Image (cartoon, rainbow, N blue to C red):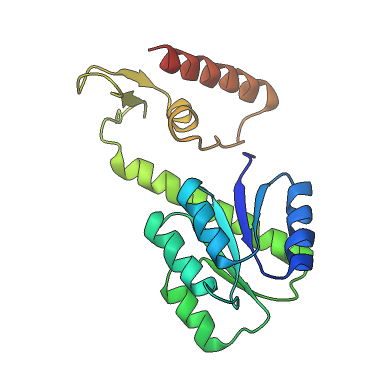
Length: 198
């Protein structure tokens, strides 16, 4: 699993620190923001895979954080976390593009499960976008022609797994035995190094 980045926005220090610590222990790269203004400032300088934001905060609230995130990158996942949830706020958050809506206090196991689902959807979005943009796919062997940095039609043909892992950092499926997966990883690393040297 790749090291996903999370921006955690909450004006309650105990929640921010406890949740941040729990997420770091699970291997996530977590950045904390104590309010919406700090979150927006961090969004100006960094890209995150997931934003988890409190809904009710002074100044820039969670809905505004959600809007700012989606304006910058519609694919960034956003989860609203609130102790003041209502049907109206949930509907509004989903209308604005929130990917999840959780009520405090949230069970640690459930939260981790829902975060994992957010990342699964993120990977699926990436794959769909990638497939939509790919035209040169061999009808027989399913290899992709990588025209990056080359005249159209002059690129080399590569396996789909290598293209996905090397170009967009989408982890390949683990539908391989350990030996074949190790061989595939080596091929992907070689492909990525060749690409960097060109």
